Image (cartoon, rainbow, N blue to C red; front, side):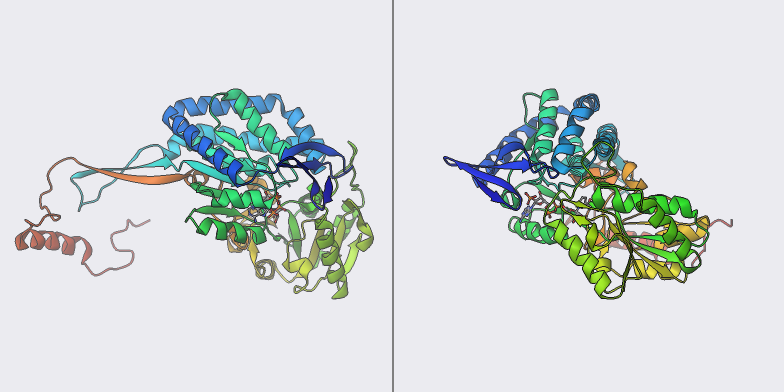
Length: 513
Ligand code: NDP
């Protein structure tokens, strides 16, 4: 058996296997096969057959089964939470919270799929007044989901639940760090739907994910780093397979002078440090209006002083799940200090493998990697700004654009800043609140990816729009016929000129308010 940086691998005959390891103890959690190209294409073939049955079931029957799955997950939440704790190291209570959010999303997707995707009449307009027009959304077939390890239930569920509710079958490649969690999820759905593999798991490393991206599935839903997203996109390009990419972030928080500083400090600390900072929508940078900068820093340092990473039930957060990330965290802290930043809490000494104590870096130049790159550790940079406008400018100056937050008691100013922040999602006077609202779209811009999961857009992401017109009566003038006459065209041009040819005057025709 060989030990790799990412776990232990073994070869028994022709079957390669690997262990998922507990990051706190390095003890193996369970052993899984490394699925090769054949196993992946066999899983996709089985999924294709299951997709036919699943889409044929109809909205009501799918909803019944998905809600039964939701109920199963709720009843067995502790078992799954213990498994997530073992594979990621996060506290069991945090794992429960994560699963609870996933349950809320299954519920919403199951209950709203028909309303969002079912047939809907649309107005035909004057030119096509003789047509009855409708749009409906058909399942794509088989969706490949490639997931990360940091929220191994919540994150892939944002694609899995919505893809299933839209009538697709799913082949899921969990991260090599969390294969037991992924397998548990598929097994739990199989206990509700025993005869048709609508959700299958293929385990392995990045190569297994590559096979899935190349397998001819109808869409890939990828969540992970921007670097890997590029490789997955290149593989998808070979078959013109569409892709949704949920990538990394470098989320900024703005704190106005009139903000509730205790609430903002509490949220910043939780947003930056919970899950050991391994959160795509975690707080990585804080911009505080100068007048309250020093008070805010004091509140932050006082709060992080009470935090303790560990593997016991009382620990505030766990170890770094992926050993390699420790190096990135170390480099970012070192770079911040080398270019003039100050560690106002913790520092390089906070790195005690596999744990990292909380680190707050102040006055770090905006060019430092600690400000421009995703750190993915329990650290944050804090900088003073003249006002919210400067905060927005600096928050927007990175390549990422996933989430963000604003703290201010002035509703108008907060909403203005929220709209100006270049990110897919913003929460005002809270952190990551949008992730718990299933009706809201989730996703980013720039290096944070494209496409949306969650909400109506998340259902449509896994469906193809189908437009249908049904001729209700003969047209007054048949324009799509070689028997069309010049007089026919003249008639239609007269009507068009009346409707569209008048000189456009802004505001004319609107009711006075
Ligand atoms: P990675 O990009 O390393 O891996 C993501 C997934 O892709 C894993 O399942 C991985 O498998 C797989 N993979 C790796 N290489 C390839 C490849 N060449 N082809 C196909 N699949 C491949 O990300 P992490 O797992 O380390 O997750 C952390 C990242 O995810 C962070 O950047 C974080 O911000 C982001 N993230 C984004 C979220 C969002 O919603 N926007 C949510 C959560 C995390 P394996 O692990 O086996 O190598």
